[in-house]
Amino acid sequence: MTSLPSEVDVAIIGAGAAGLGAARALEHSGLSTIVLEARERVGGRAHTIMAAPDITFDLGCGWLHSADRNSFVKIADQLNFEIDKTRPPWREQAFDAAFPVKERADFIEALDAFYDRAEEAAKNGRDQAASAFLDPGNRWNPMIDAISTYVNGCELDRVSILDMAAYEDTEINWRVRRGYGALMAAYGAPVPLAPNCNVTRIDHAGPRVRIETSQGTLTADKVIVTVPTNLIADEAIRFHPALPAKMDAARGLPLGLADKVLLALDEPDALPKDGNLRGATMRTKMGTYHLRPFGQACIEGYFGGRFARELEDAGDGALAAQSIDEIVAFLGNDFRRKLKPLTESRWAHDPFARGSYSHALPGHAGMRAVLAAPIDGRLFFAGEATSPNFFSTAHGARDSGERAAAEVVASLAKP
Ligand SMILES: Cc1cc2nc3c(=O)[nH]c(=O)nc-3n(C[C@H](O)[C@H](O)[C@H](O)COP(=O)(O)OP(=O)(O)OC[C@H]3O[C@@H](n4cnc5c(N)ncnc54)[C@H](O)[C@@H]3O)c2cc1C
Image 1 (cartoon, rainbow, N blue to C red):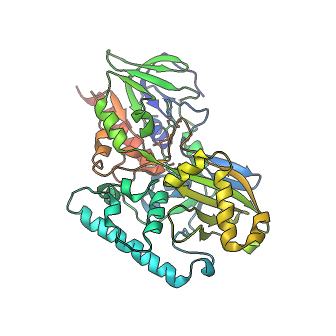
Image 2: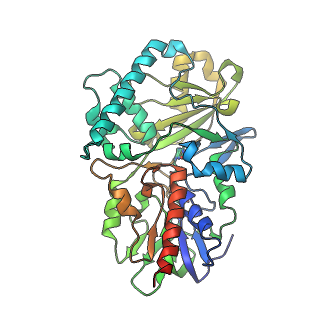
Image 3: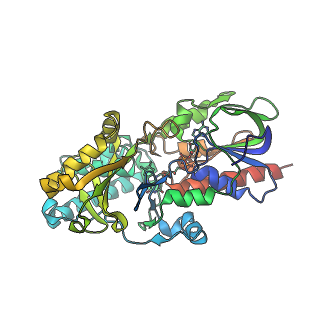
């Protein structure tokens, strides 16, 4: 932990994956740096807690997506964090009676056909809402939309097909046994950090950039901004002079919503380790459940989009109550007494996130590059939303921080 200096070479705003990636990339650059973080902890949307003495839980990111291309895999190795390579159960269902094999195969076929149509259409370069590629009247449409709420944090009517096609999913997904957030905290431990330091204004009118924070003011030669798009769009940080192009870009790349809930499970042996259960099959408003993650005595529920928003707005405990009702509807009322709420996330109400991960609105896929572009060789932008191919992920965020750090160094090399 570092107290606030009055001036630095490079100020990095936000200690999430992007800010930490930038700071780590600059650690041997000879430049003085400071990471200004509004929270009292590093990690941002990566946050591991012990939900019970023997239950590790990631409130934010949990999966090393595209693991064969994910820079956190090597970092985990270096920091001695065990990686679990168990395949995710997303396309499976633990209880046949709840979703019979034949029905499941039919659904997967409809889902894949939808992705193929959207991807094919994206090849002509004209952007549209992904919902336009649902097969009209197909009985699986509500469930395909539900999958979008988990993947994109919103329904398909708000998703750009060009953005969807730009994402690189290698379909290899691993996990960090001690938690992705714990890995992030270890990765960020060496960075010079000013915690509880909420940045409110960035004045880039003068020869040095002046940064106003809840801990006082400092000046910097270069600034790397990594805060989530919703904070830029809401002007939680004000720029002077204003940056209308950045605000437009941020508005085109809003954070969707995904929330997690954790239920303790009595008599865990009744359920399979790392199994999957869907809260329903024929509607969009439903949770999806990971049974006994890592074999732990718990169930992790996942909600997205408008339904997640409704449940968050309903107040603490609403996600847990919904989950228990859905699970009991499939597994029988006897399960009600076996399930106890442990914790749930509230990412929309989190003042320093205001959502979960970014998606491009139809017509706005090009905004990722606009958001990422430096200004006057002094203001640089990183964060998951700026990643061209791994947006919405932790490794995409980290890599974007490294990219912004390289831009800072390159700007200094210029005569
Ligand atoms: C429920 C959920 C599940 C997810 N699942 C996965 C997954 O399985 N795999 C995956 O790869 N990704 C997943 N993600 C996404 C992933 O967590 C994010 O994409 C990534 O962590 C974003 O990193 P970032 O550095 O861009 O932003 P953040 O982590 O949001 O970091 C930005 C930082 O800026 C700080 N900040 C904000 N405003 C200010 C201010 N005014 N002054 C100072 N500091 C400020 C914030 O506190 C924060 O620490 C998930 C996210 C959620 C919410």
